[in-house]
Image 1: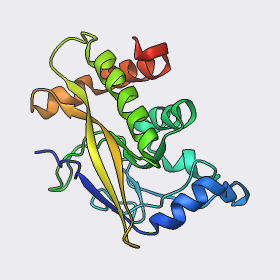
Image 2 (image 1 turned 120 degrees about the vertical axis):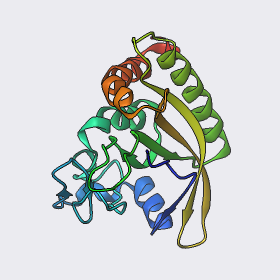
Image 3 (image 1 turned 60 degrees about the horizontal axis):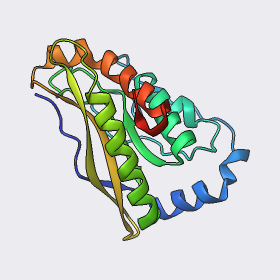
Amino acid sequence: MNLAVPEVNEVTGLVHFLRRWQSREEKVYGAVPLRRSEYGNINYEGTPESFDSAIFTRWHASFAESLEPGIRKLVLALVQAWDCLTYSSCEGHRGVGGTAWRPRHVRMASRSSTEDQRIGAELDRLVAATNAQDLGPPGPIVVKRRGTVVGDEGLEMPGWDLIFESGSGDESNYWAGLDLRYRACLRAVDAPDGAP
């Protein structure tokens, strides 16, 4: 059984995170040590059970390193090419020790209604171009889903989630096809108008 990506994501210090993203003040901050599990999870505990992790802006020295390798290139492409504000991501993890497996995903917050519409349209093109590629046996598909970001200060923002979901519900097919679908998605991000 996989662990669904919740539609609402709570972010502690959301207002301060938004200010730091805009101000670029984190450019002067040094790198911080990150904890990794033996399965690749990067979070506060360095375990597959933890969902809590540090949240860095694109300007922080630890931003790229804080992204799990299996999702890093996509997050960086969305941030640099599309100017997305990403706040959460996961490379996807197999279930271990009774934990459910987690799908690969990226979560983005929209800073304005104009940005929300722009990113939604770009994601529509990206999803269509990525899923249009025949990659063999049924593996994951990429979906765009409306998300909501809620800060502990009471701020609520719309956002988008880009999720690599199981096309067949079969975990072994998911992992067998994940890297092919991911590479197709990366090609579509870089292509003009989301074309493959």
